[in-house]
Length: 206
Ligand SMILES: [Zn+2]
Image (cartoon, rainbow, N blue to C red):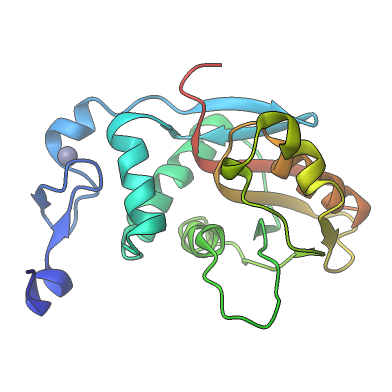
């Protein structure tokens, strides 16, 4: 059982859980093997992601999402910030936004929103709820690839007028890109001038 002091004052490598210094983001050995960010094109938008969805990287994301290790958000978002800076060179953004969850009155934690907030802090940009989810969908990872497209069809709408804005869209994981594509369509409906995207994890191979 971890003590309160251990949880509050110990920083750990997100990938191997070794204790690290407070000013470090990962341990020295995981740093050496960190992969290069990749780009997946979705609906003519570049989506960059720093980590492949496999091995210790996948484990780190799953710990963040399902073991409620929310304190990992800032550490994980720093990889997204690096991927944006190295892959979207020269791009200027007006705001960061995220894939929303459906609001049915229940308090629901949005993993992508927390990552977007931390990323926005690192990039000194505002984080806005630029999209709303119009209806409840099934979890994309729980259904077949064929059903994923229809599951999220028209599920998102713009939450305002984004005329002339350059938007950086955030999600946690990109697999088929169906959710991302629907969000891009909604941002275009909201008249966003330019759209780029970043996720924490994506396909290990293109
Ligand atoms: Zn490590």
